[in-house]
Every structure is written in C-alpha cells, then in structure tokens.
Length: 237
Image (cartoon, rainbow, N blue to C red; front, side, top):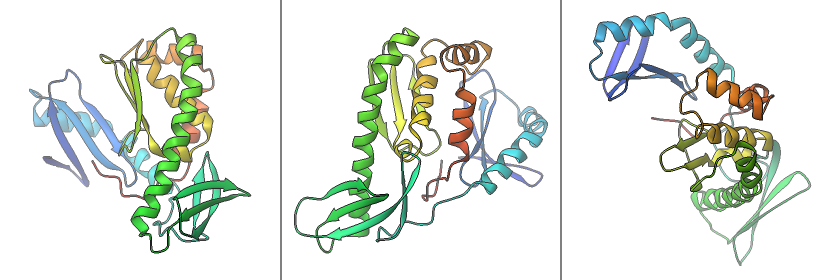
C-alpha cells in the first residue's frame, strides 16, 4: 500500500471509489491508515490529515498507554482472558481428545503429549469460538426483535482492526473472535452496533440516535472495550 509522510507521521494511503476521506488509527501501535477518494489530490489529503493531527496523536497516546498481553507460550501459569476475567492456564498432557474446561479461575487445557504450541493455541481458539457463537445465538433473537431488523447470516472470525463488521447489502455480521476474551456486555454492544447499521450505514447523528434509543449506555460499553488489554498478536493491515 502506498505511503505518505507528513512531518513525523507516516501513513498508509489507499485511494478508493468513495466520496469522503476516512482516517483510521490502528491498534496496537497507532499506525495511520487513510482511505481517500480516487480524485482527491495529495495536497488536499495532506491538509485533511494535518487538520486531524491532534485527534491522531491522542489515539496514538491511548494505544501506547493501553495494557497488552505478553506473547503466548501456552504453558501452565500463563494468564488468558475469558469473558473479561483473567484465568491461569493449566496445561494437562494426557492421551485422548483435546478439550478445554474452565473452573476455579483456571482454563484447563487438555492435549495429547507433544502437542505443539501452535496446536495448543488452536484448541483454545476453537473453545473461544464455540463459546462466543453460543452467546451470540442467545442474543440475536432478542435484539433482532427490539431493533426490528433481520439478519441473513452471521459468523465469527479473526479480525485485524475491527471488533465487528456488517455487510448491509447481504445483511451479514462478522464478530471478532477476540470478543470471547472481553466482558459479555462488550459483545452485546458490538452486536447492537452492527445491527443498527442495517438502519443507518454511517456513523452519523441518526446512527447515534438509534444507539441512544436501544442501548443508552453504549458509550460506556465502547469505552470499556477500548481500555481492556489488547491481544498479544501483532495487528497489521
């Protein structure tokens, strides 16, 4: 992706068939991504970015101050989050089916002897996926009825820069697998946020009015989600 330098700021520039310029500051290290209309000049882009420098710097400071999980080695004693609470990993090597159980503030990971670190991580990821899907399945019927919209499809996947996304045309929502590590109210916030996009595509006053109506404390939930520890993985775009 093309790069642009503005003073000390280095940004990724992506020209697209869009009407307005969008600036994103990406976790975990505050990299800057700019999506600009195809016909917008470099000078106009620079002026737009310069006008947003105070906001960009604040986002970068917030990311720098945000706690991070250490690299995962998938060994006993390591801290892993589940529904917003820290748990100690208890690795149990034994012959049989791989499985995960949670009890007593611990995540018990049962794997065959010699299972690689990568495969241990996959077993835990599948546990997170199953629990996240089960929680979404409980929430969707109620919220579809309350918001008066209907989804055609939804799924869970690893996402690099978003907690959720909505394909309005297809009426499909994607949830970030990392949400299984966050408090349940954060997942509910993301669900409602994406459902509201079926009523309003943009993050404008109409969108915020819908959020205020259906989830009055959505800002508190959003802020909670954005201050929790970032995943250990390296986020790239």
